Length: 289
Image (cartoon, rainbow, N blue to C red; front, side, top):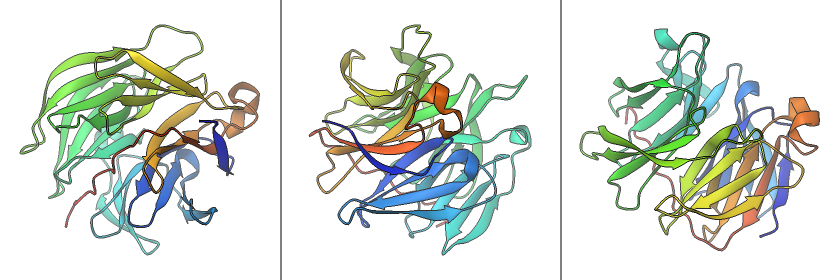
């Protein structure tokens, strides 16, 4: 379980790793430098995949092979063969901010959360396959990681600033969320900002990055902590995803290359740890397809 540093692109805001099953690669993003990277474990090769000009808060793999980017000002664009096609140019309420984390549901919709701004809270939206955008939640501190229970009847949603991961009932037919309740509250700790990116493993346990202490934690379905894994040389672990040939490795993004005295000497690096617990592949979005 000893973590391994895979690549170091000096990322300011490494986030949103996704495992591409068909390619056997992991992709991830540096939000504020508008870069997307990818790594092929079998060959050991990693590379800069895309360099843009606007913040990329998150992305999904589309069913047709393209990438769907969630960006600054609430813009949503398709990246195909290095070219961008706009689906939504901006969301008026998000002109001063950006998207922060996203997830595809079993039907190909995308749930996409935003950052707060001075005087305005964050929000959670649902992007339906026909391109319709719906506000689902308002009054959020900071939208972050999401995931689904194994039966696809409930959805997890993280509000970092409230230090909580919530659980909702999820309707696959409509995409509606209901009956919000607290799944997990991270205790007050001066070093921990709160839970950040998350994923759910094949046993139904929830994994979340605890931003500020360089670790990811695994929680049982009842919300009790089962283990922690610390990553050397970093304090701002931001997100994780399962991948590898057996889906039993975790890939972890970190942040803070622009603030190493506070964030650690390897801040902004990309890590892997073999945990021997299997994860599940993420769903492909079908926006506009």
